[in-house]
Image 1 (cartoon, rainbow, N blue to C red):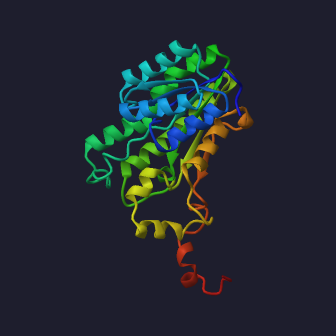
Image 2 (image 1 turned 45 degrees about the horizontal axis):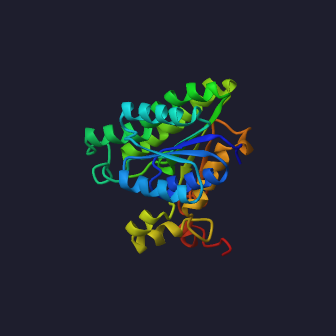
Image 3 (image 1 turned 90 degrees about the vertical axis):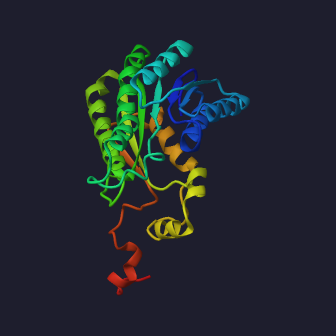
Length: 269
């Protein structure tokens, strides 16, 4: 997937998809700089990955703070002298979810924190990482987002808007820096059954979601991580400026798919 001695920076790597991405990139031969705001969990992941034989540096930082992001990138360069892969995986959702409803009721604080982490965190990381990447001959950036940025909903207006902004950022940076050797792509993730999702989602919610999937099973963290790592690696050298949807076909069909027997009773089962 990647060449030996390359360096990958992964934000939001203390659990879930970020942790799995770090492991897969480590298996591909990358040295790893993992980041999260959760210090104890991040150290636990660092220890686990180190025990598997990976070269890992952990940097506790809040990607919603520009100075923290700058320190993260500088720490990566100081530790390894280069950055080849940047995965902007950290997101703000939990913690502001209950207050992020619709445009009338979502408070300024929820908008500010959501955009600080989900959008500006990616802006700052990309801005600071590109000069380092260019000194090493180029690099690959993957912005991790949600299908919320592709469709409207009755809730989570700030979250959705921040994701849409991240996809626009992806196209802009891919365009402005492509000829300099920088590839930039995004993934728009549907529901992934991470440990957190398994813990928090009710059986009713899972049943409603499952009815609209076009595959038989929910995606696991490995399924999303494998797409992220493919986009990060040389196998995707001809792909840039794209947002790849990873959602089990959830957004590929008409909205009445789950009620097809009512809307189109003549359709074969």
